Length: 339
Ligand code: KG4
Ligand code: ZN
Image (tube, rainbow, N blue to C red; front, side):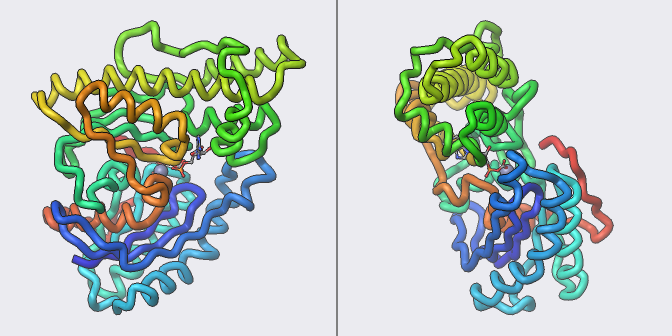
C-alpha cells in the first residue's frame, strides 16, 4: 500500500509518501518537512497564530515536493492520511483540509489520523515492533505511558497531570536564559554541571502509579535561581535533567509491571520511546539500563521518526487502511482527542 501522509498539528509542516504493509514494515519513499523553530524562537515557545499561518503558506508545496520526489502519481496512492488532532487547531484544520481536498479530487479514501496514534505506531515502520509493546511518549506536547495492544487498542497507564516533559525542558531553558528549543540547550549545559550541587524534587515519586508531573519541578528551578543566584547555570540544568530522568525511569519501571499484569506478557516485550525528548542522551542511557534490568527490548526509533513527522501519519494510514478504517470527508478536526 502506498499512502500520502500530512502532519501540521504543532510547529512542523510535513508531507511524506510511505509504501508498506502492517507487520512487514514500510519504506519512506519521500519526505518533505519544514520546521518553524526559527519563527517561534523569539517568543520562547510555539505561537498558535504564527504556526497556522506558516502551515497555510507551506503545505501545498511540501505535498507536491514529497509526491514528486517519491516518483508516484496521485493515481498510485491507496489513501491520503492526515492528522485530524489533537493539536493546535489552526494547524490541524490546514492539514486535514488539504488531505480532504486531495482525497476529494482523486477519489482516494481519507484516513483521519490521531497524531498520538502516529507516534504510537511509528516503531512499526521499521517492522520490528510486534504487538503488544510498552510506549513512553515524551514530547513538547505529550507525556504518557501507553500499552499498545493493536491498532486502535491503546491503554493509558500513566500521563502527566500538568506539563509535558519537553515543555518542562523548554520552560526551564527559558528560566535559565538558554534559548529555544530548550531540550537540546539544557542537555548541552547539563554536560558541564554537577547534578548533585542543587537538590531538586522528584515530583510524584512518593505516590503510587505511573502518572507524572513536571510543573513543580519548573517552580523549583525558579526558586533555585532565586536562592542560589551565584550557582552556575550548568549545575541547575544538570540537576533538572537528572530529576526528569529519575522520574521518567522510575515511572517507566512501574509501567512495565503494569504492562505485564495487563497483557499477561511474562517474557521479553518491546519498550519503545518516542517524542522529541527521546533525543536526550541521559534519558536514553537511563531507559536502556532499565529495559536491560527488567527484560524489555529497548527500541528507540531514529530521531527523525521520534519528533513530529508525516511518515508516521502515512504509516498509521497504512495500518488503518489495512483494517478498512477510513473516514468520510465530513470528519472534523479536533484540538483535543485522547487515544
Ligand atoms: O516531538 P517533538 O518534536 O514535538 C512535539 O512537541 O510534538 O518534541 C519537541 C520537544 C521540545 O519540547 C524539545 O525541547 C524537546 O522535545 N527536546 C529535548 C531534546 N531535544 C528535543 N528534550 C530534552 N533533551 C533533548 N536533547
Ligand atoms: Zn508529536
